[in-house]
Amino acid sequence: MWAKLLFILGLLASIQALTIRPRGPLREDVRRFLRRRYQDNDPEPKPTADFLIGSNGQRVELSLDLTTRDTWIVDKNCGTELCDMGTIGFDATQSVTFRNSTLPFHGTFYDELNGVHAVAGFAVIDQMQLSTYPQNDRTWRSVFAVVNARDTNSTMGNWPYYGAVGLAPGDGDLLDPVLPHLLQGYSDQVLTVWMHDQDGYQFFGGFFPGSYEFDWTQNCDNTTYFTTPVTEPTTWRFAVNGVNVGTYTRKQTEQAEINAQSMLTGVPPLVYNAIVSLTGAKPGNSNLLNIDCRKIDYPDITITIGKKNITASQDVYVSRDMENGDQVCRLLFYPTQSSGFAPAWKLSYLWFYQMCFHFNTSPLSVGFSQQTW
Image (cartoon, rainbow, N blue to C red; front, side, top):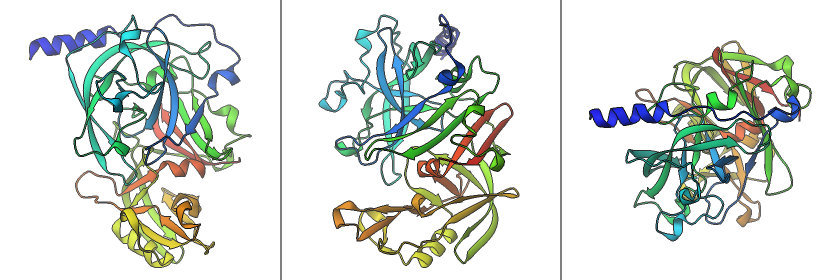
């Protein structure tokens, strides 16, 4: 036990900033992009950001995970064809700065139905940087996980193609939090995220470490901006005080979080039942409910946070099934089980298309503003 503790301390002590390259114009320095890309056998596209890993700068796509700080990457050389992900997998044998360990890692990823699947691997150390503007970005050494196994009950379609970059703010285990490194050197300790559709299958949006002041006029409306404190120091969880959907209104203070790993929004069971009634949803495939795509006037959903409201259109909870000629749509809600410490609300990444989210680390709070795109 003491040997493992000393090794962990040694890993953490070895994390240090590498050479800082000169910065370019600040506008270029804070500009980032997310993608939402369809892959073969990928049941659900997720917002991803590119990172460069290792001494040779291997480009790795990592999906955003705002509920954990654990960052893990698929091992390209794990011994099966499922691990050969091309540019998505990480080949540790090609990096001279790679440092291995025998410390085990156990994490999770979400499939298209918000099902949780186990992945396993080991903790490693290597250098990392955000890849959009490598000439301006800081490079740092990080303790992350390389995943080389999965749940034996998972299908091929549920293999974790991307890996995940954990962006939760608080304390975690031996893995190194990425968010402080992304925000190092900025006076404004804020990560701003928004998305919008563009060019068919490619979806782009903003991913802005540091200051968000440059995006008010182009992408986010500062007149609608407000913040709410997080309700626990290790996550971006916040309080929702009420909801309105059509003729249904409910006032109840409950916990909420943003699940950037899923396109499904989890809501309290009473809210779910009301939405099913309002939309006339019927049982469908894959445990999701069907609604009529020919109806175009499904109500907005408004969530009350403190004394402020955020409103999203039907686009956050209606998905067209293209294989059925647009006659059938899917209801992208599911009822949560909020017993214990689990949140009653889980907002999907589709909410990034409706508004800007601002994750403030000092003070620890979540900000919201309407998009102007």
